[in-house]
Amino acid sequence: MVGLVGMGDVMSRLDRHAGPVPLGLDRDPRGVLLLEVTRRLEVGDHLDTRQHGSVTHLRPPPGHQGYGAGRRLRIFIPCRVRALRYTRAQPPGRRWNDMPADTPALVERDRFALVVIDVQERLATAMPRRAEVVSNAIALAKVAALVGAPIIVTRQYPKGLGGTVSDLEEAIVPLAAHGAHVQGIDKTAFCCAAEPEFVRALKATGRDQAVICGMETHICIAQTALALAAGGHAVQVVADACCSIHDADHAIALERMRARGVDVTVAQSVMYEAVGAAGTDEFKSLLAIVKGEQ
Image (cartoon, rainbow, N blue to C red; front, side):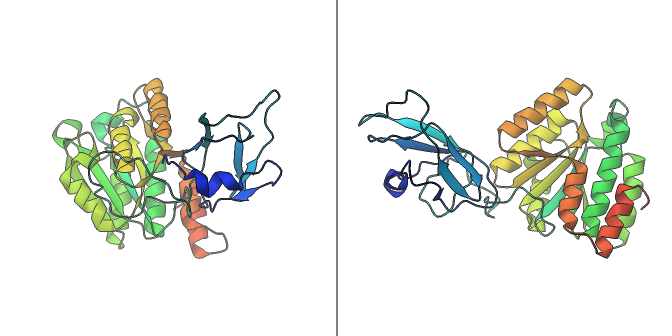
């Protein structure tokens, strides 16, 4: 998110001696906000957003002489902002996900859908990290079913790449039999969001968070994650449940997605965030899943 804050609303309240200035930040400090100072003010080069949703006006650096009328000081603040006027830069085209994009970084059980992309036999045999990725994908699917989150499983051109790996297939089929919402989609597009059936399926879930795992990170995972993020979803890519044949491709793809606003996480983070608290039957099931006992 990139915005321009109306300076009349903000800068008149920025006094270097006044301390923190509340800006109505969302609970998730994230994104980029660009402030432009166009009148003479002695302001610091940094604004700190980490203290309880406030912006702390720091002291100017040594030798700072202020900014004259007409000059601009650009200050980048990592935050999400509410209650301020701003314009948000959006990609061209109409957003097909009409849910709000103002979403928290944590996975929420009633907001996320698990998307398992192309974990297929002939593709997986070439992956050095096959065992780890398949194991974590299975655990993610079990926890998604545990908390009632929908699961979408895709296969890329199964005639050539084969079906879903047997271990994952054998784990998912019983979940569906016991009431989990599981949908399988065959595709030819590398980007799932370019496949109409996938778009319809994801929209039908009513979920605006997408947790993505599968193969390969730098191709189908990256294309799907970037497209969904551009379309308004909050996207989390599970790094230890994704892989590429070459580790360098995997690492570069994660950095590329992170730079475009996609959250990069790990399987246990997703699972614990989805369950949310200890002391429940769900938590006992989560522990069993993590330990490989369920």
